[in-house]
Image (spheres, helix red, strand yellow):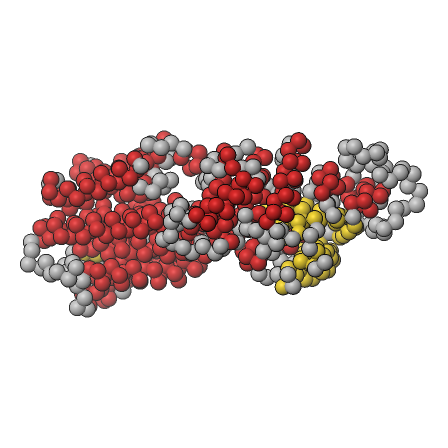
Length: 318
Length: 284
């Protein structure tokens, strides 16, 4: 119950941000919301299915470049269409990549996903005629719900319609994920994480559940990735680089993967922490490294783990 | 009586080592069969072959008249075979009820329901609860498996196999690691549950001879990958030599003295049917 109240409170606060907060912080909320969508999916894979992907930037890249390709090479400007196609492409790529990856677990799974991520990164970098190489591609301002905002100043567009659009996408993504983790499928996923041999003996096909979780998480990552493009108006290969995947893992650890809202908290803390540290220190990664170490050692349950405690044992067990 | 599970001339090699050497075994409707034998006799390998975890090197395994060599544990569970494990196998982070619900979800083929609410699925919940009550775990249904005492973990492992409502169930040492006092209680629960859900046969691997002789209809004795005997408990007990070979020391309460000073040499084969001449001690 308190969780629901907290969530409702957070939703209300998010609605109020553009009205009360400075534009600068409202703009910072945009990458937060995009990454929050990505992390909701990644946590289905990590927190619920027990698979840690080091290559999810691949799917962010697929989503972000989908927006760039569609607005550059076609007449499609509708963000709904972009999101749908991004989701479909992310899911398709994950269906293929995942079919191989889910046969492996632990570090082997992580390394395989990393390898596929690097392949995609190199593709974006080297096929510069199509992808623009390291300069990336432009993302033209998309229409929202069929409405064209091209006459509006960019900042107004971002802190206004685009902000609320992103928030709506995040809300839908959260509700859908909330249902997924509480479904029979979600329960089966946890059995697969906890004890694959036992799950198989109960007739639950481990590889199939892992594969489904992988595909769903990729769809989320692609949708989140597609949301990342319009605020900057540009996408480049660093979105798909492995450090990006590392950031995602950091965000999940920061927020705590043992709870549903951990990834949301992690994305929020990461974005705003990164901003505040960067404004005073060039070597922000130094600070982040120290924070990451401190979390793993002192708060293995992440920020959410500080609120409800049983996580330390769970983490050491994993 | 119809045969449910049948192994014919099954061998299984690990590299150069032959763990099973031509094992044949048939389990019929209504039977409780115990597989016994010393460590390394091939009991766990046999269970793993029968449950589709391992593929036999040669020979066939048929369940309900289907060749099951290649279908794997998941399909076997769906066909109606369930198993529990030698070492405790629970889902550490799941509660007792969730564990049983997972089995029920699997049996009802609802694992693909992505957006349905599990909490609202009364059918799954009531069936899981029924099994929890049957196994005396009703009060602990909200306990997280990791925190259960060892005996309850064992019970939960077995209970989740029963929640599949299998036609046949294979139990790998269902009472190992459980106090002697609790063993009979667990076995009674187990046999009662099997009757209740309409399970057609039970196969167990067990070291505790009180349990083996107290509950089995038939005992299959393995020794060095071969079936040394396939007989009723009475016949096994009467076979002095067999007792020495596969049981070693006679269990508590038996009226025979210490083991044979000249045990069966490794690899040696004597006819299990007749005890060797000159065996002075009386059979039990």
